Length: 120
Image (tube, rainbow, N blue to C red; front, side, top):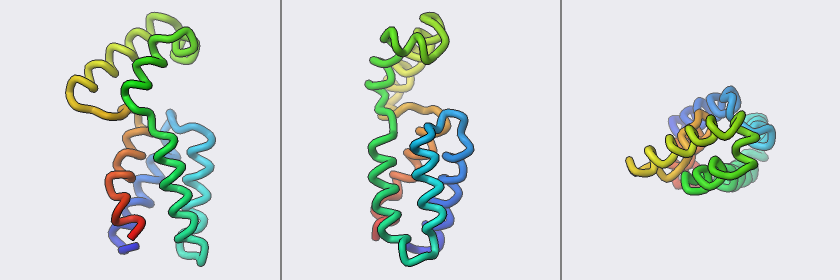
């Protein structure tokens, strides 16, 4: 991977790890990738990391459905808060967003935008 691309992915990966909205699984995957950078395991770890990120990013339609569910109300701290999340998600979807815009998903989206360069 090109040094500039690597530096970018490392930066976005650190943003992901530090995001309050980053799941434990995604954080573990990000940390494992960082640990593999510069080793003979980097290429394989990079493939796994990208696959993990693709599976973890929240599509905006899924966010809307979840926020409008009973489970969403529990996660977001009540029906009113969940309704606010759903309304926000609908607003960003109307603006063209494909994914959730929380800090973790935003970092993942930025990494995945460079997928072809990362895997080259």
